[in-house]
Structure formats: C-alpha cells, structure tokens
Amino acid sequence: TSDARAGDVGEPPSVFAHRGASAQAPENTLAAIDAAAALGVDRVENDVQRTEDGELVVIHDDSLRRTTDVKEVFPGRAPWKVKDFTAAEIARLDAGSWFAPRFAGVRVPTLKQYMRRVEHNGQNLLLEIKNPELYPGIEQQILKLLGNEGWLDQPHLDGRLIVQSFSADSIRIVHDLKPGVSTAFLGTPPVADLSGYAAFTDGINPSYASISTCYVSAAHGFTGPHGRPLAVFAWTVDDAATALRVADYGVDGVISNKPDVVRAALREQ
Ligand code: G3P
Ligand code: CA
Image: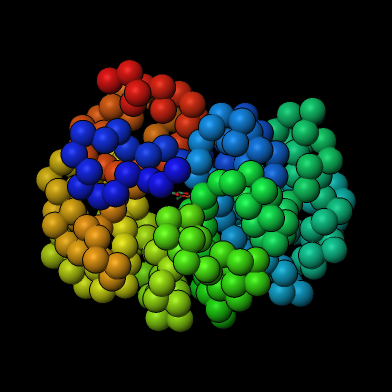
C-alpha cells in the first residue's frame, strides 16, 4: 500500500481521503476513517489540535462550533475554541448529527483513539499539525504519542506515516526531533526557496489551483532529507476533470473528500 514515489513515470497519483472519507461520514471521526477503509483508500488525512487540559484531539477548525453541538451543550462558552474545553467536555459533544442524523452520537476522537483505529484498519496516515501556533510544544507531544502507539518503528516510518503542516517551523521541529519521520509542507513556496525546504521536508503539498507542470517538475528536481525527490500531493480535488488535470501535471498524490470519484477517474485514464 505504499504511495507512488515522486518521479514514478506512468504511475497514477495516490489518492488520500481528506479528513477521512468526508463526503460520506462526518469529517475527522472514526466513522470517516472506517468509510475510507470501506472504499479501499489506504491513506487518510486528519487535523490534530489540543484541549485545555492537554489532550490531543482530531478536529479541523479551531472552534467546536461547526462540527459539534457545542452551542447547545455549552451555550455560554462562545466562541467555543477547542483550546478552551477539556477533553471530558469535548467527549460529551455530538460530532455526527450536523452531518446526517444517522451519525448521531459520533464523537470527536482523541488522537490516541484515532491512531488505534487507523492501525486496526491497516491504513496509512497523513497527520496534519493544525494551528501549531496555538499549542506550544505540540510537535513533541504528538511524536511522544506516536512513539507510544508504535508508529515510530521502522515499518511505520517506511511509508505508513507522513506529518504535514502549513507551518514550516512546525515541520522543521518534527524533522529535528525525529529525523526518520517523513514530513510535508502545506503550501506553494517559490521555486527559489525549495532547496531550503528540502533540508527538512520530503514533500510539498499545494492547493491544486496554485500549481503547474513546471512547478511540479521543479519540486521533483530537489532531493529531500530521505534521499528522494520532493513528493507533491495536491489538495483538495473532488472531481474527475481536476483529478486528471493535476495527474497530467505529474503530482504524486491527490487529497480528496471524494476519493472514490477521483480514484475511478485516475484508473480509467
Ligand atoms: O491536506 C490538505 C488540506 O487538509 C489542507 O487544508 O484546511 O483542509 O486542513 P485544510
Ligand atoms: Ca487538513
């Protein structure tokens, strides 16, 4: 189940389930990674943040408002920031009903719960450190949990785990603390800056709208810390035409809310 390596000519890009299979189940929940497993998608993307009492949890927004019933359960606590709630408070919230009634009672997972389900499902992980500026020391904390869960052994380092962030500082910290971990920077740095990024990141994960064949080949021309060409995973691609376009650019992976749609398009080309 390894992803196509950067520069593999003729290989269709790998397809990743963005926040899990988030068109089929509530994003960043265990239901969403189970849905991705049912589709046969072998890498899931998530977003990791931290509670007021220091628990790592999987949720995208810095507020609980959009994806839980926090407004009803804790009406006086606006703006309902993740960092202002304890893990026990967050565990009471319904993170499924907003998506569809049949997901009522689905919870915001802790990262530990999430890792155990990913492992149980045999999936690979693209773990995003979200808003690290709000959570000093979160990189070390995430690495400690990954180590405790067995995700820093060689088989996991060899393809199971990639850590990404919009924060170059955060990715650099991960690389310095555990050089064996594969990392990716979220964004589209100027080509002139890519050699600097290649000192601490194995990949560049850009918005699909920001790239071209020229940019992808330029990225492939740099070698990351593990001796491979920088990989390029484009987000967030949910339709066949865009998937085919970015595949033509030469990207190594596509991050999608609709991985089944995108994978079918890429296989048929
Ligand atoms: O993995 C790429 C994508 O997740 C980055 O954007 O806002 O969905 O975390 P966002
Ligand atoms: Ca993300």
